[in-house]
Amino acid sequence: MHKFFAYISRMKYITRWSLMRNSVSENIQEHSHMVAVLAHALGVIRRDVFQKECSPDACAAAALFHDAAEIFTGDLPTPIKYHTPAIRDAYRQVEAEATEKLLDMLPGELRPAYSPLLREEDQDVKRIVKAADKLSAYIKCLEELEAGNNEFGDAATETLEALRGMEMEEVSWFLDHFAEAFGLTLDGLQRG
Image (tube, rainbow, N blue to C red):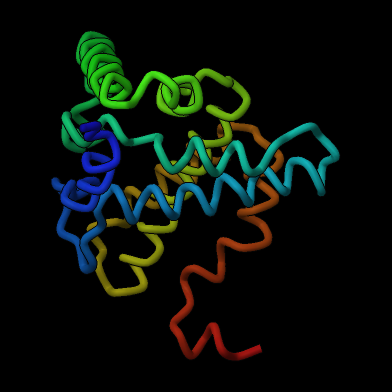
C-alpha cells in the first residue's frame, strides 16, 4: 500500500498564517491551489506577453506540490522561518527530509515524475512558483484588509515591496493588470 496521495490529501489540515488574526482561515491545500493558478498565469504572461520560453503547465504542477513537505513540518511562520540564517538553513534541511519521506511513499515507477516537482529541480519554474507564492500572500493580505482586518496592513506593504523587488516583468504585469481587483467587494467585481 502506498500512502503518498493519502498524505497529500491531508494538506487541508495544515493552517497558514498562524501568528496573525485571520478573518478567513486558509490551509495549505487551498493556498497551493491558488499558487498553482497564479503560477500558471505568470507562466502564460511570460510566454505570451513577453515572448519568453515557459511552460505554464509545468509551473502549475510544481505549485500544487510546493508546500507538500509541510504535511510533516507544519507551516512555520515567515518571521520565524527566516529569523536567522541558521534557522532558515535548518528548516530547509527538515523540508528536504520531509520531501524525501514523501517520495519514498510512491511506487518506483512514479518517483521520476514527482521528484522534480517536490524537489523543485527546474530553477526557472521554481522562481515562478516562488513569485506566485508571494503573490498569493499579497492577495491574502488584500482580502483580509478588504474584510476590515488591519492586522495584514504591514504584511501587504512588505509583500508588495518584495514582489516588486523580484524584478520579474511577468509579476509586475500581473500586479498592474489584476491586483487592484482583489480589493473589490462582490458588488465591485460585478460592476463594469
